[in-house]
Amino acid sequence: MSNKIKVKFWIIFLLIFSGAVFAFDPSVEDFIDKYQYDLYKSWMKKEEFPSHIKALFQKDNISKTFKDSINNDIDVEYDWQNWKIFNQRENLSRFRKIEDKEFVKCWKNLESFIYRFNCSDSTFSQHFMETTEIKLVFMNVAGEKALGLLRDIWKEHRITILSVEHIFADNYITFKIFDEKENEIIISFPADFEVIQRLMKKEFTEEPSKLVKKLPPKLFPKKPILPSNQEIEEEKRDLLKLNLSQFIAKYYKFEQSREILNNKIKDVLGFFKSEFPNHKVEFEDEKFDLTTNPFQTNIFSDLFIEVSASDDGIVFLPSLEYELGNKIFKMKNEECIDLSKLSDFEIEKISPFLPQLIYQHRAVGSRLLNFLLAADEVSTTLVVKEEQKKIYDIYSYENLLLMLSKYWSDRTLYFSILEVKKVNNFIEFKSYLVAREPETGNYDLAEINFLLDENYKIDLIMMFLNPDLKE
Image 1: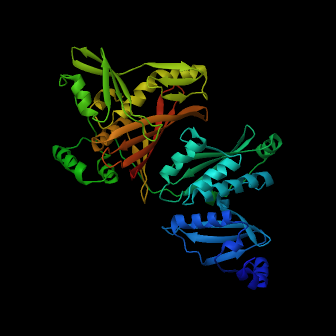
Image 2: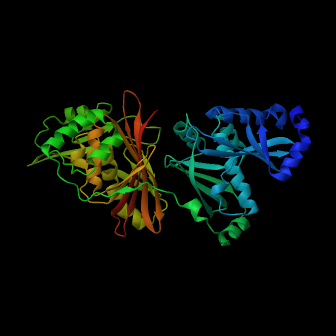
Image 3: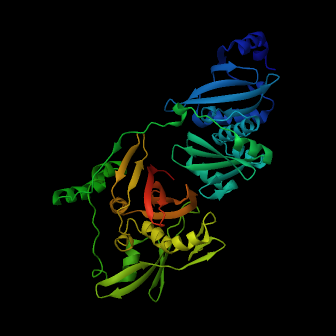
C-alpha cells in the first residue's frame, strides 16, 4: 500500500460508507502489478486527461468521471481488492437493461475491452482478446483483423458508444454496439445453455429516457425541382468551393439528369482509361475488367463490364458472371457475399441483381454511371454526420447518386455488401461506399442499408454519410 493510501486509510474507510469524494491520483503502488499501472497510463495518454480529479471510493471499486475534448462525461471504474486496483473499466451501465449475475459479468468484460481499446497502446486490446473467450466481429471480419480495422477508424480518437443491444443465442451473450460513426460492432462471450435459457425467459423493462435519442429536425423535400440554367452554372462553381455537407444542403432538392453518351463514345478502351485512371484495364472481346487494390482489404472497386453496339450507339452493361455455392455469392474477382441467412428461394431471387447494384455504386463519380444506374423512385433517408447531424428525406436514390457523382468526380469509389440478413422477415443489405481522393488518401464514407420488400425489390434505403475522413 502506498504512503498516500496509508495516511488517508481511515478517511477512505469513512468515504466508502459515506459516498463522499476527494481528488485521487493513483501511483504504481496502488495497482496490483505494473501491467495494470501501464494500462492506466496508456488510457490516460489517449486523450491527455488530467489525473488529479475527484474520485468516489466504494467497497469494490473507485469511480472517476473524466471530460473528453467536447465535454462529454466518461465514467471509469477501477475494481480493487485489499486496496489494490486489479482491473479497469469504462462504465457503460447507462445502456444496461438487465441485472443478472452472469449477464453483469459479461457486461463488465465488455467494459474492460472498451477501456483497453481506448488506450494509446493497441497491445492492451490485443492481449485482452488473446486471454479471454471474446469474439469480435466488425465489417463482416472476425478476430484480430476486425480489431485492426476498428483501430484504423479510431486511431486518433476514443471510440464513443451511442447504444448497446444484447442478443442471447447459440450459447453466447452477444452485444451489438453502435458508435458515433454509425459502425456496428459485435462482441460475444460464451455462456452456459442454462444461463442463456434463463436470460431469454426474463422480461426486462427499459427506461425510455435512456433509449430515445434526440434527432435534429428533418428536412422534407417534395419531388425534385428542375434547376434553372443559372442554378446549373452555379452548381458547377460550387463543386470547387463547397464542402460535401454544404453541397448536399444546397442541391439535394434539385432534379439531377443523366448525360446521353451512347453516340459520343468512339474509343471504349480510351473511355475506361480516362474515367478510371487508377484502375488496371484489361479486355477480351467485348468484356472489360477494371481492377485496383481494395480499400482496407474488404471494400472493393473492381468493375466487370460488357460492351455491345446497337442502333443507338454504345451500350455498357454490368457483367452477370458470378458463382453460387454453399450459400456464398462469389464474383469474378473472388469477392464473396455470405447469403447463409437466406433460404435457397430467396437467394435465387436476389442474386441476379447483385452485380448491377454493386457496379453502379463503383461507377459513381464517372460517366459510366449514366449507363449502369438503375432508374428508381426509392425513398431514401440520408443522414450527414458532422458536429450537428442533418437528416434528409430524399425522393429518389437515383437522384442522390447522380448528385454525389458530380461531387466525387475526381475520386476512386469503393463499394461492397458486407452483410445480408433478415430483419422482421425482410431481407436487408448492409454495405459501405467509400469515395477516396487518390492524392491525399482522404475519403468520404457512407454506410448504406437496403431493405427489400416482399417481392424482393429494394423498398427503402438509409445512408449514413461521414464526410472528410483521414486515412
